[in-house]
Every structure is written in C-alpha cells, then in structure tokens.
Picture 1 (cartoon, one colour):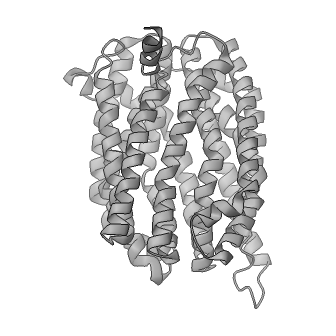
Picture 2 (cartoon, rainbow, N blue to C red; picture 1 turned 90 degrees about the vertical axis):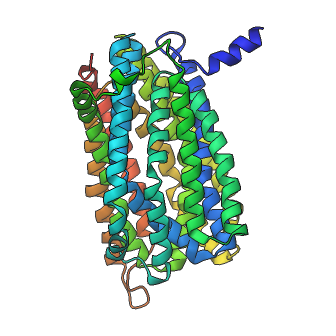
Picture 3 (cartoon, rainbow, N blue to C red; picture 1 turned 135 degrees about the vertical axis):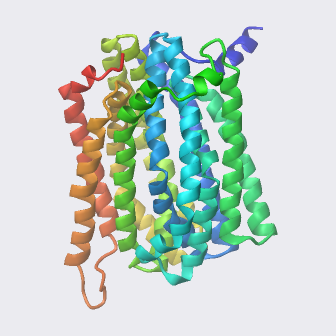
Length: 462
C-alpha cells in the first residue's frame, strides 16, 4: 500500500519550500534529466535515420534548418518562461486564484500565437534560407522540413509550455512520462516514414510533429485533472490583462535572449554554410552530441528556477541561497562526468550518425574544442535559473546579449578572416567552436558576478 502511495505522489505537485535543498533539487532534476535525454532523442534519431537512409546531405539539411526554426519559436520561449516563473511563485505562495488565472491565460495566449505563426511564417521560409547562403543541394530538403515543422508547431509549443506549468508546480515526473511516450512514437514513425515509405526529410518532420502533438494533449489532460490545486474553466481561459502583462514582463527578456541566441546561430550558420556540406554535416553531429552534454545543465537550470520560484513565493531567501550553492555543485559534477564519457567514447558516438570516417574524425575534433565549456555552462544555467525563478529575467538576458553579440559572433568572424589563405578562402573552420567556447566561459564568469551582487532578490512578483 505504501509503495502505491509513493508512486502516486510522483505524479503530484511537489512543495520545494521544505526539506533539504539539494535533495529537492536532485529529486526534481532526475525526471528532468531523463526527459531531456528523451527530448534529445527526437533530434538524434532524426539525424541517425536521415544519415543512414537518405545520406549526409539530408543530414546537413536537418541541421541547417534548426537555427531558423528556433528563431521562429522565440514567442513561445517568452510565454513559457514567464508562465513558469509565475506558476512556481504563486504555487509557493499558495495563491490559488492567481495560479488559476495564469494557467488559463497562458493556454489561450499560446493558441493565438500558434495560429499567427502558422499563417505568417511558412511563405517566407525558402527566401530566409537563401539569405543564409544555404547550399542549393540541401535547399529543398531544408524548406520542406521547416514548413512541416511550422505547420505542426502548436504541438511543440503546447508541450513545452504545459510541461513547464507542471514543473513550476514541482511535478517533473508527469511531463517525463508523456515525453517518453512521444519519444517512442517518434522513433517508430521516423523508421516508418523514412525507411519504409521513403519520405526523406519530410518524413522526419512529420514524425516529430505528430509525436509532439500527442505529448501536448497528454499534458493538457493531466492539468485538467489537477482541480485540487487550481481551477480551469471558461472563466480562467479568458485572457486577464494583468496576467498577460506579467507574462510579457517576465517572459520578454527570456524570449529576447532566445532571439539573440537564435540570431547569432543564424549569423554563424551563414559562416558555417561557407565551409561546405561536409562541415555542415559534422556540425549537425556535434550539435546532437552537444545536446546530451548540455542535458545536466538545462535540467539543473530548470530545477533551480522552480526551487527559487517556490521559495521566493514563500519568502524563504536563505533557503534560495542554499539551493543555489548546492544545485550548482550538483550540476558541475554531473556535467563533468557526462563530458568525460563523451570524450572517452566520442568517436564511437559520432560513428552512430554516419559511416564516413572523415566526418567522424572532424566531428570528434570539434567536440574536443568545446569540452571545457560544458562545465562552465553548468554554472551559468544553475545561477541564471535562480535569478529567473526569483523574477529577474533581465540580467540573464543582458549576459546572453554580451556573450553572443560582443563575444561569439565577432570572434567567429574575426578568426575566420584572420586565418584566410589561398587554400582556405573562408579561414579555419575551428572559428565556430572556439567562439562558442569563449562565449560560454565569459557567460559563466558574468553570471557568477551578477548572482553574488544579489539584485535578483528584489524582483519577486508577490
């Protein structure tokens, strides 16, 4: 009977304002980490299936489409960030009416933004890709992939936003289960559409869209059965002006941060494209493995955001400081272990994506350059998470702006320009990874300085 009760509790909201801080963060992070592994499997399986069944150019096409797709989704990033902070603080403060209004407003606002993006964005996809110097050999595949992903973007948006609401209330387990279901379905559909029906890159996009739509429906079903925590009816679904303003205030800096990051990715992608299909394909492989290396950082970042939000809502600032220190130590340790494993077995991992040895060697070399940066990112994500959870989303935005615009892009193009030779008309390709490593290290230093300054303590919404 006790075991049944414990299992049931995994699917319930968790109060992170009590108990040992590092244990609360670790318990919350484990489903997040598993979920991030599952989410990374989406893009990884896409790349493996495409690389083996369609070819290296198709693999490059999927990778080249990613930065532009992420740029188009910045509105959802903003909504998700804002609502996550509000939910965690209102839940920590036991403010049922505000919590209910926030969730209902968010659901309606997401529907409006999804419809807008679905209508406006697809007609301009091909022109945007051409502006980025996307090679003609992969242009058609890039276009079809992006158009399908945009038409099905509502499922992805709702999953990320609704699962963020669940996590804000301390329930990271339900979101994990729904994501695992979607991941298994995505793998099955990938193989079916690409290997059996020979749909190519379009099949990969369609598989992802269907799987994400199902995961979003499951999240909504879960929320509709949480009446003991908040209310969800027609009254709550009417957008409340005060909640929209609060979401924009909190979410806009995070949305702008993502926009800045995505813009830099697009600018750098233009430089990446100049190095040819082989380098583009290698960069895609690195991005996939990079996703696994980053997982502890994003998991602990989300955990510290929820932890800080709930405890700020409960006005327990000493506990927030404890959690920040302990959570950062956990994140750094976990990141160091995973990075070590990736470096140790790197070439075997790269070989999963392609049978081309030159591509494997190039990808592994690029990964080695980035290695130390993952540990720096553990610090950035954890402490930024604390600041965001407290309601300070502006400081992380400025740090991101600085590291991306002032550090990454100039270094990438600077090294490229300074290393040009007749044999290398666009310079050395290492400029892409070196610039990213520099941005990560500077970001960790700046985040630590601003966290210790403590201005984030004055940003609570309550």
